[in-house]
Length: 110
Image (cartoon, rainbow, N blue to C red; front, side, top):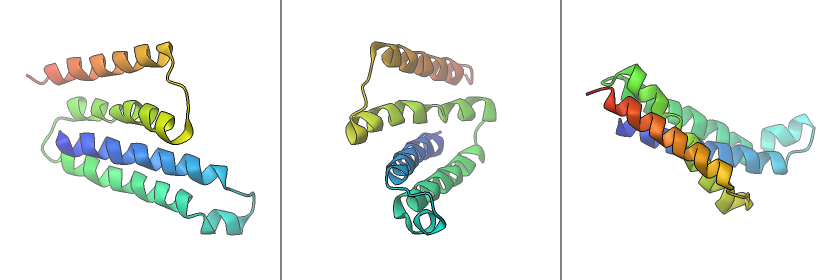
């Protein structure tokens, strides 16, 4: 389970890097190839998939896959920290629902 949670954390940093990369992207092939932020975002997504595979080796897919949705929680906070995006009341409610769902699915394992 920890592999998947860590993978979701790494994946959320991938989203941050992709966003940062798109802010500096010009619409030409050279910019796409030399944009290290885009490249690191893709690399972090791939790395998060590796952690997910490790987690799947010993866990139940029906419990572990919903843990990937924790990346939404992490990404909300990183969006605020790195890009100054607002965390609204609706976002807090939505994150609460995600966490409640993940918790209920985790209990389903027992």
